[in-house]
Length: 412
Ligand SMILES: Cc1ncc(COP(=O)(O)O)c(C=O)c1O
Image (tube, rainbow, N blue to C red):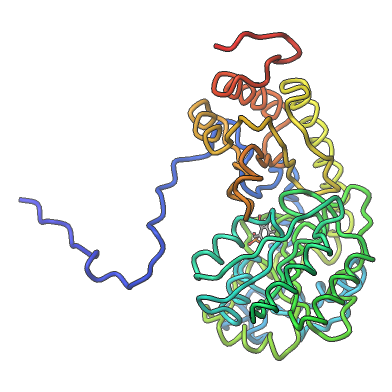
């Protein structure tokens, strides 16, 4: 006789999100998520780093936080404070940094510190799905502000802020991904960053600067971080090792004034993020980060070229895109009759996964025929084959492209 399984349902806390779906594996041709290039993980360097750091300091693992306090491994924070000064112009000491479990935990801590249901946050109209779904789940209104080639549009931001003010709403923060925007791939120039700071100061709204792609720029040149340009300490800066080293490590960081950092630290109740990852990163990055990143970006740029060639060859003029300034994504516009939420389902059945545009936008109609393709994780071969399959599926479902691989086709 088998006993009936215990029923947890009546005991579940109120307001839980829907249950997670079971993992069913990656698609054969996977263009989704923010995954990196497996060939570019510096495995040998990481092995050497594990060996060196554990031999030297392994016994510190006996103490929570490696006896370095709750903000994270000191040598990693020291590395970051040098790197942020050199690359982004941010002047911060190890004590101004909090190491977290990926920048997703950073977003959670910012949200827990600042948001309550009914609040309003300003976001870029096209934005990171993980940030948008968090706001929805918290019952927070996300006001989307349109973007152009230089990122967040200041005229549109100004009217959104003025409109909200008139209605008595003070947004809790402006969320921006200014340095290689996700999904559009733009970099906000320095002058516009200054305008953004001015507007934020005028309206008394802080900025959350999510800079996780800032290392992956084709020409290696970036404007100073918005955090570095602020004179009032109104910017919370978030970064990550996910895109520069590897996302599965789950190591990110927050730079913020102590008034905010101390609040977030009080909400970080996991007794510290994984210590081994922090130790290995500090050991590897201090001597190797500056040489690893240009090599990584060269490889990513080559994959982007393969993807753009494949999209042009398979979709022809049916696909429009702008060349991203860096990063790991291509944001593509297909003809209006293509519904990328439907294309996503049909493509998945054929072994190709894509990110449909509406999941990355506050304006579902604008994003209906847009999609995001990650080019970092598939191989060059998989990019070529996967895009050919995607074009075939798209043609069957929506009649576009009318020509495939430059060959005229009749709709199936
Ligand atoms: C803009 C943005 N922020 C945050 C994250 C989360 O990254 P992490 O792996 O550091 O949690 C991602 C991941 O793709 C992202 O694109």
